[in-house]
Image 1 (tube, one colour):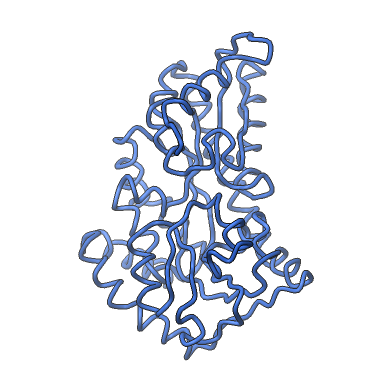
Image 2 (cartoon, one colour; image 1 turned 90 degrees about the vertical axis):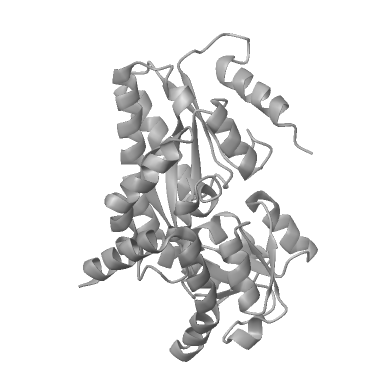
Length: 334
C-alpha cells in the first residue's frame, strides 16, 4: 500500500534539496504519470523551457514523468498537489471529475465531433466554469491541452461490431460513466491506474482498454495489444494544473509568469497532438497493429447501447451544464 504521508515527505525533500543537500527554493516540481515519450511530457518540457527562459534562470523546473514522484498513483498525485507537496501536475478531465463531478461533461460519450470543437468549448465559458470549480479544491488550471479521443485497443480483435466486445476485459479510468458505458456494451470493464496497464496487458489480467492514439503509442501498449478500433468514444482534455498552495510561495509577478508559461505550453501541446495522431497510427501499423474504423451502422449500435447511460449521467451531472455544452457544440459546428 502506498503511504501518502511518506510520498509527500519524499516529494518535499526532492523539491527542496539538491543531491548534495543544497536548498533550491525556486525549483518547481512537475509530476505526470504518463511516459516520457508522450506529448504530455513534451508540454512539460516546453513549460520548463519557458519558465527558465522567461525568469532568466531564477526558477528551474524539474519534470518527473511516469509517476516516479508519486508511486505511479494518479489519486496520490492529485492529493499531493492539493496539499502543496507537488507544484504542478498534468491530469486528464476524466481524472479531474473525481474531485469535481462537473468535469464528467467533457467525457460524455460522443458529445464532441472533433478535437477542435472540444478545445473551443474548454477555452470558452464552460471551461472557465470548470476551472473555477477546480480552483476551489486547491488546484488551478494554467492551460488546457488536447488528449484526443479514446480509442479501443484489444488483444482479441479486430473489433468491428458490438458482438466482438462481449465478455472482453477492458481497462477504463475508474469513473462510473466509463464503467457503466462499457458494461452496457457487454464488455467487462476493469478500473485500473494508468501506470499498471502495460503489465496487466502482458499478464492477461485485461484484454485491452481505452486510450487516445498518442498515449497508446507513448505507453507502448501496441507491443502487447495488436488491434485498435477507432471509435472516438470519449474526448479528454489535459490540464496543466498548479497547486494553489505551492503557487502562493511565489511573488505575484512570478505567479503570472508561471501561469502564462503553463498556458503557452498547452497551446504547444495541442498543436503537437494534432500533428502526431496520423503519424503515430502509421508507426503502429508498421509494427503489425491492425487499426480499423467500424462501419457507421456498427458505430450507431455502439451509441444506441450507451444512450441510456448518457441520459442517466445527464441527470447526474446536471441538465443545465450538459445542455450548455451541447448547445455550444451545435453553435461551433454551424
